[in-house]
Length: 178
Image (cartoon, rainbow, N blue to C red):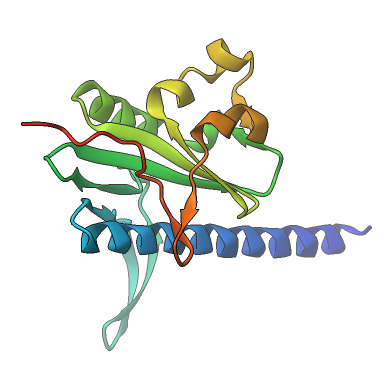
C-alpha cells in the first residue's frame, strides 16, 4: 500500500469515527430529552468553545475549537444532585483511559468530590453501552491491571436500551433526598 493510499484510508477512518461519535452523542441527547420530559433530569450538551480566525462576512467565519476543560454533558437530577459526564465511543475492543483528557478528568474529579454524579458513558461499536462511574474510570490500572477497559470488564456498568431506542444511562442513580 502506498503512502497516499494509507493517508486516504486513515482519513476515511477518521471521518467514520467522527460520524459514529456524533451519532452516539445524538443518542445521548435524545435520552436527555426523554429524561427531561419525564421530570427525571435536566442535562444538556456542553457547547464547545470556538475561537474565530477569519470573518467571512454575512455571519460566517472560520474558527477552531478551543481546548475544553468541561465535561461533555452536565445538568442535574430531580432532587438537585449535579450530573457531569463524558461520552466516549470506540470501534476497538477496548476503551482507553486516556480518552478522557487531563482537563476533563480534573473537571470530573472536582464534580465527584463535590458529590455530583460523575461518570463516562461509553459506546463500543455503537452496540454496547456502559455508564462507568468516575471512581472506576480513574482507577483502571488498580482495578484491571491496565489503563483500558474491555467490554467484559465494563459489563457491570451496562446501560439498557429502553422503549423506542432510548439509552437509559441514568437508571440506578439515586435521587437525592432533601
